Amino acid sequence: MTESKTIRVIAPVEAIAAHARVKVTRMQQITEIQYSQHHNTCATIHRLNKAKYVVLSTGEIKAYVRNDNRAQNLASLKASLKCLRRLINNNFSGEPDELFVTLTYAADVTDPQQISRDFDHFIKRLRRRFATFDYIKIAEPQGRLKSGRAVWHYHCLFKGIPYLDPTDLAAVWGHGYVKTKALQDVDDIGRYLTGYLTDIPLQDLSRVDDFTGNLPIVTKTVNGHEKALVKRGRLQYYPSGMNFYSSSRGIKAPTSQYMAYDEAKQMNLGKLTSTREVAVESESFHNKIITEEYNARRQ
Image: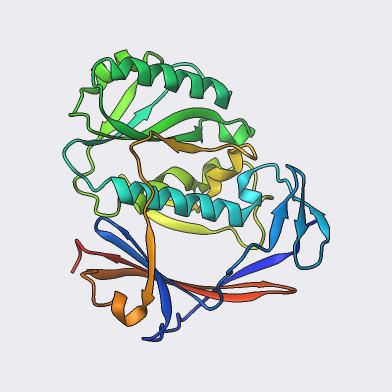
């Protein structure tokens, strides 16, 4: 067993000191500033194999904890969603040649490996028409979730492809209908899509035992009607170890740089859109992390 770790959200959020060293990640119009009370300057563990690792400070050999699905491993889940959100915002900003596409199946498909093969064949056919384009693909479980069985389809972001009629694109896909959406009216595509893809209507949730404490339920207006949604509820249907998103080679991860907080504030950041403080605690470690996000399209 690995050492137990607790993550607590703190409110109200403490102000970041002007001289504090922060990490600044710029993603087109989105900028993230993160302050960490403590920093790891070297590795604390060494991976031995898929099952075990050694704690460098003590020499103790421990086993990795394996979970049945991603909702049970909240830290891994949040890290994956954060990486995806950053990747989207670093490469997509609502340009005319960017398109949000949903690829569905006419018949139920419950094998994640099958949809991966089908997508690879789809991309090969699409490249015969458009030689240079890039994409991010995200697998989503949907369908008869109350039975505990996920039915899979893909959501994709494409750039470098002019608008295509969904019927025309469905002929290239070949497995079911296709829905397309332009994103010119969305100024934080990463946050919009990660919420859209992972939240699940409360009425569709079959298992709640994977969540500890109170269910993270929010109410949103969808198509003019209020709907109760469970934050990240859909993630419990992803098999453990599954990479639920991937991208083409031209999609680049953002880079970060360190500087004083007051120096970062001199940049053209735009409006502060979110701020969050969490405490990370275990028997041997305590840290405080404050994250601010700015949007240059909002003033």
